[in-house]
Image (cartoon, rainbow, N blue to C red; front, side, top):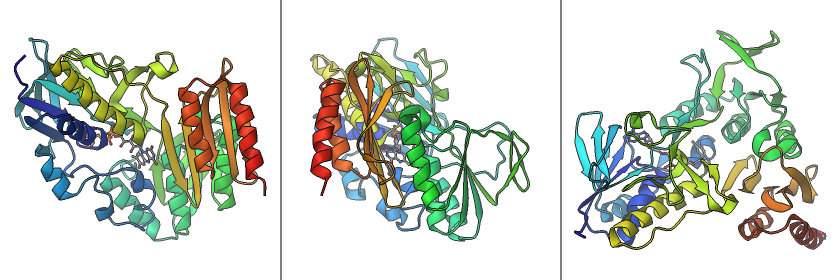
Length: 410
Ligand SMILES: Cc1cc2nc3c(=O)[nH]c(=O)nc-3n(C[C@H](O)[C@H](O)[C@H](O)COP(=O)(O)OP(=O)(O)OC[C@H]3O[C@@H](n4cnc5c(N)ncnc54)[C@H](O)[C@@H]3O)c2cc1C
């Protein structure tokens, strides 16, 4: 098979960068074009809702790689111009990416890493903030820094709650609106969701669950019951959607993400990684997942690169299987979650208590450990990643957790 000459990676953030690095560490010396819609070189998003938003870090802290490290990768960077279309190669290997400025780039393999973007509400006013990019974070930071604003956060997911913490820490008056009966209910369930709400109530945040937004007015947010929540600053943090519109007409299967197989392959020589990829996770019986976590984007970017090279080297591709992991920092608290559960799974607070603001909750389905969520017990939570990967019985996980609880007692 002839040596491949040119690979194209679309999306210049975490998954795209890791894909480029994976191609180089895997021994590929040919051309790599990295296309990015943003002007910036790849940067880290988690600090945008934490240290950057709190004004503790400046932007020089969040570059994912130094200028020298990027240079060593010898990438052809096309930043500030989005890919507008993908045409699959009729020869069945890779395709042609057309950029919004009309330029066409032929890649013998294409890795799609276009991530996700904030969902918006109907009638969302242009003055309402979202939080995804450097520009979003800096705009919000400017508002929070005043310290005397009435801040209304719509959506009590990770973004809304981290922003609530940043706004409150700066002294603003903060209200969080959530349509479901508790924060982060779908992933965490009611008990852990209530514990998350309590963390914010401790700090003086008004958390209002079970309310929906009817309309925006000049003076704030109108709820469905007719109440007006007065607000100077509004952030809509109601989740994200995969960026796939540029792939319409490509022939790839799209459906809440780029649908890929276990190998992260969307078509011959076309792979997807990170927030944009929906894949069957063999770790959870092939359940279809699209995960919006940092670790997933990093791992999948590298994995897709490995499979691109495997395809060219004639060796078998490997499936991507994982136990998802996400963390969140709010005030002085560290929240972690490993695994994959839904609100229907049984949950037991296995170590500590929500009242002590220190606990680990375990989730089960069909007698197996599915997930663990924890507040301020980082090492204990992480031990469960391995147990979930091993398919541990829930009963065994509870016994182990009990032993861990004993070791926590003074
Ligand atoms: C504020 C914030 C805080 C977060 N905090 C945490 C956290 O604490 N823990 C955690 O685990 N995860 C966190 N995450 C999630 C984590 O950052 C994401 O999962 C990760 O960034 C996904 O990486 P990605 O490369 O797949 O996509 P993205 O980071 O979304 O990057 C996709 C890139 O592709 C570009 N792009 C889009 N369309 C095109 C196109 N047509 N052509 C070219 N380029 C395009 C985008 O502009 C973007 O730069 C946070 C996310 C945000 C926004």
